[in-house]
Length: 349
Figure: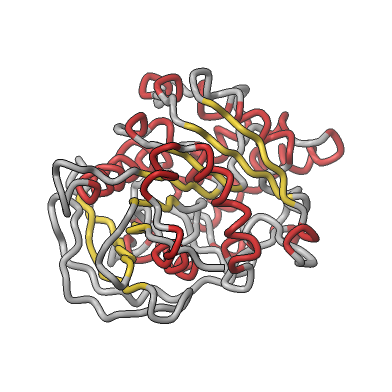
C-alpha cells in the first residue's frame, strides 16, 4: 500500500462561501450551480459548529424547485474534501434530496489558517464531533419546511465516512445508511498476498512520514489527496494495526452506537478497489451492525460500462448515473421511508 499504488482522486477546488450558523442550517444567498444536472439543483454555503466550537465548511445542495422529498448527508473518505462529491450531490438533489456535504476539521475549507501541522485534529474528532455536527444539521433540515412532517434521512459514507458513522451521536435516527468502499480497516482483513504491504503502510510508512514532515502530506497517499493532520494520521495508523481496528480502541469504543442502528444498511465493495477496501474488509464491517438489516453489494466496473472504478471512481463526475443509480436504487427500495417520499418524476437517468 505505497503511494504509487493508490487510486487517488483529482480534487475539485474549495470555492463555496461559508457563513456560520450555530444550528448548521444554511445561510441563503449562495450562487446557483448545477454541475451534476443542469437546472435541477442549487448550492448554498454553510458552516457547521461542532460541540467543541470548531467550525466546519459545508454546502447544502438543494432541489431547484425548493421542495425536497428527503435529506441526504454525504460523509467523505479520509483526506478528501467535500468538493470531490459535488457532482454526486447535485445529482442527488435532482433526485429530490436536500444534500449536505462537509469537510472534516483539517481538510478542505475546514483547514486552520496557520497550517495543517498546527492542527491537533484526530480521527476520533472526525467521528465524535464532526460527524455528529453534520447529523445534527441534517436533523434540523428534516423538519425545517414542515416540523410536523419530517423528511426521511439517508446517510451516505465513503470509506471512513461509512466505517465511522456509527460512533456519531444521532446516527440511530437515520432511515437508511449507504456506504461505498467502507471497511474495517485492520490489515488482517486484507487478502493474504497484500497483508504485508498494508501492515507496512500502517506500521512503517505513516509513522516515518509523520516523523519527517510533522503531518501526512498528500503525496504520501498518492497524487491529489490532501495533507492530513498528524493526529488524524496517527489514529489511522494505530487503527490499521490494532486487532479490531477502531472498534476496539478504548478511546472511542464507549461511543459505539452501531448496535442501535436498526435502519437498512447497504455496504458496497468495488471489484478493483484492492488497496483501500477489498471485499473481505467490507465484509468485516458488515458484522458491526448486529441489529440492522445489512445487505452486501459488489460492483464490477463492467456492470456500469466502465473500465475501472477503484476506491474513488464511484464519485467522479464521469461515473454519473450509470454508477449512482446502481448505488441508490437498492437502498431506496429497502427503506419504506425513502420509497414513500421520493418523487419518481424527480429522478434522473
